[in-house]
Length: 275
Image (cartoon, rainbow, N blue to C red):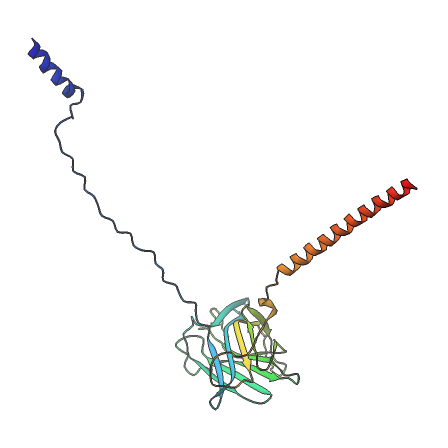
């Protein structure tokens, strides 16, 4: 009887949990390798630079990105605009020419804005003129652009013609021996010269210069900007510390004045009471 009881008790766990058998479970460990973060720094795009030589010396040195916004008319007579860029992301040949002088220095860029160039088509050109002033400063006083309109450059147009636009006023001044810098984008409108007679309405053209550095009437053969930098007002970030200090000082002076006034008023009242 005791033997039967022992056998029944030994069967109880199996009846309660029929899966409790002598089964071996093997866990496979998967080895994972974590890739290190990519620390590659993408270099900033290089701003195109242009130089004009006087023998072995560089008399005129410029660095700039150029954007040309040109409006044109489609076949319905509606105005449209297309932008053209001269920067590090545009890959076409640019011919650089210019002149050095005592009072006038020039830069001329010649190119075709698409590849391949249309056969026998005249190139686009952009000219800049720098003058030396009597006060010892140089200035960018004149810009002119020649561009071509055709169906390959301006979609949905039936016009094929050459346009000339320019701007004749001072864009900036800088002391000779220093260089001018303006990183902010600055736009100017180019208009048709009065000497050019067009039978059609001249579309609007805008030139935008950014990341600009300019040094005219310089010497030396090193293509780097020398001398002190003159910054444009668009790049100027006002110092907020000075206004804060001035405001705190004024507030302190007002508090001191009010405190002095209150103390002196109380003293006068006490003097009247004693009398």
